[in-house]
Image 1: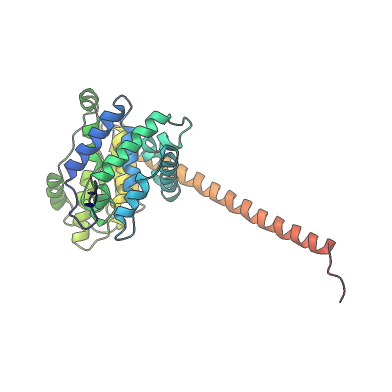
Image 2 (image 1 turned 90 degrees about the vertical axis):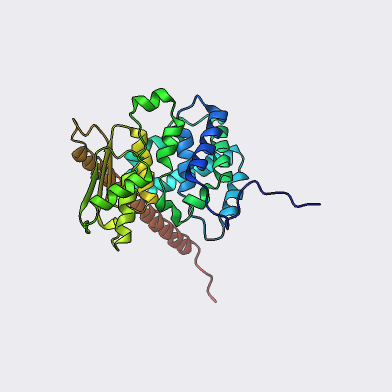
Length: 303
């Protein structure tokens, strides 16, 4: 009996074309749940993108995710976004439109979770992990073209959505970033999903400079694009000094507002961590005291 053909590529094959992957994801979403907002498929693809499987285990990882039923898939997405929030609380406000569907106060209905699951299957079948699950993630902006593809024409026009092609971004970065040095700032007041940041980061690496040694400021009127830029900042390893905000660069003082919001969130996180540590310490002391009391109440008989 001939072996059954695999419906997904093994890890040794070449990575998929970016637009082929984007179109596969968009088709799956439009078939499954066209009326729901694009936050759902974007947050699903982002959760997959944040995975970093061990070398040689891309296929095994994809198979594990395909095998999840709806409830376990929901828990998987919640877990992925919980990890994101714990590791990068500084990006929580920017990423919130993608975090909210899975960690917000209103849980998604089963039909929407099933639609998200179909999107995940389509992305995995099209080879997403071969792009985002490897170092290739630093070479691409998956969310720029995907956001454009998922939006209806009216929403796309209303948001002024325009995806900067990678080759144009690379050319701009080569001109602007040739003399950048650690401690410098990179600012894009119309950052979108961050395509120019990606090109700049790769240009810095090519010249031996770690992108994490610079400060990155990005603003945009499109909150969903900013959320995608927050995820991209992690995928592209831009470091901890990333400030993203929703605002009109022509009228708003978005930089100061973003810095203030970031500072406030980090202060809250520090207070919560301190409280959690204190609670753990108190619990440990209480258990030790209880154990000592038990030992005093039940001394060992003399030998």
